[in-house]
Amino acid sequence: MVITRLNRAALCVRWSPCERKFAIGSGAKSICVCYYEKENNWWASKLIRKKHESSVLSVAWHPSSLLIASASTDGKCRIFAAVIPGMEAETAETRALAGTKFGDVLLEVDAGDGWGLNVAWSPSGSQLACSSHNSTVMFLSGLDVTNLASLQRPGAGQHVKLPCLGLQAVGFVAEDRLVGGSFDGDVVLLVRAREGLWQFSHVVKDQATRSAAPVRQISAEFSAKLNMFRSQGQAAEPPADDRPQDGMGG
Image 1 (tube, rainbow, N blue to C red):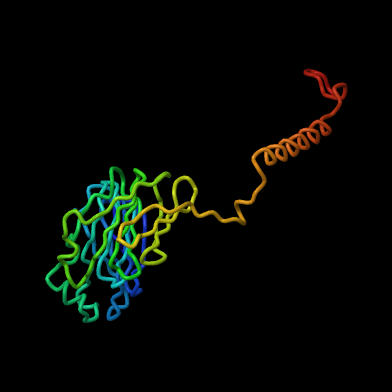
Image 2 (image 1 turned 90 degrees about the vertical axis):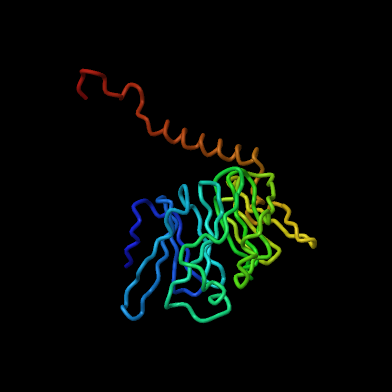
């Protein structure tokens, strides 16, 4: 058990790749980072507060477990330092982040002209994707934890307009492939071209589930079953002469 100190609903939760921390996005405009203190045998928590102007709908851990990205209904995508003093291994990444404090905003960009819905890191951690309610996906490339300047380049994002509704969930399946689940109920694929630009590819269709009967056939089957139930109901009704009349006994 861990006390989160959140006074609003938890909207999302993600384990860190190192499995020693997890982050909770909330309706309290904050992120709660929980971590295990082995010497005390309990879970503790730290809050990233006063950095969002609205609810946090999605959080994603960098593969190093040292950064957290968030998508918020204030329309922003942010990257935070999430180093917990005393529990991180000595690496090039932790040395690069030595001058930062827990919860520092390392990057803040527009997710799109709408709510930020979902955010995801690429397997290498060099790219970040954030979907927006206005049917766009924002991509950041060339990110490097050991070089904080790469997180502070103005105009580094690319926005890709989608021919469908916004993506409620996104995830990298490779450095140059991103899949997303849209409010249309479809899974879509975006790909990165050789020149480094992302673009919409196609809607992923599962032939096993999409090979259903045509709409007319489904409608005919439904009508037939409905008529069957109606006939059963009519057969169960007593004849008109046998029905009790108002004010009269059987």
